Image 1 (spheres, rainbow, N blue to C red):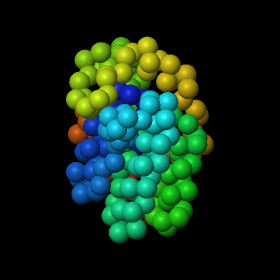
Image 2 (cartoon, rainbow, N blue to C red):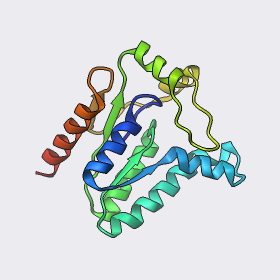
Image 3 (cartoon, helix red, strand yellow):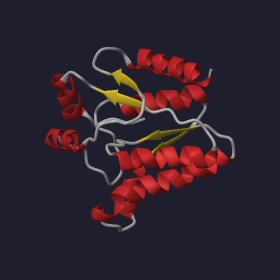
Length: 167
């Protein structure tokens, strides 16, 4: 899963993990735990992705399906998942959540309470900054506009996409 904060990616990731009986690895709680352990915020960005990657690798080697919940804003992060996929000889399917209606997106951010211990909620101005940092995609992905359909419908769309990708 990929997408800006508040785009709906975590909701879809959780729904997919439940439907697929897959392991869900979310980068934000990993990063928050690192902060609680005393690491500085400047040390944890890519490191949290590396921890998620290591955990995913161990589970993929056991034959488990893994759903990664992360912003994945840059090609370096996305390429890390491509490399893992190749190393473990498993398919990789990117799904990007986006909220095309900016007013809806902003209202979600302003109302959001995730309750991740040690991690404050992101503010709208930071989401706007992150959007500017978001690199264009070079790989095919399923894009889901979470401002147009209910999460349950989008999860079904994603499951159908995953099924067709495995056919």
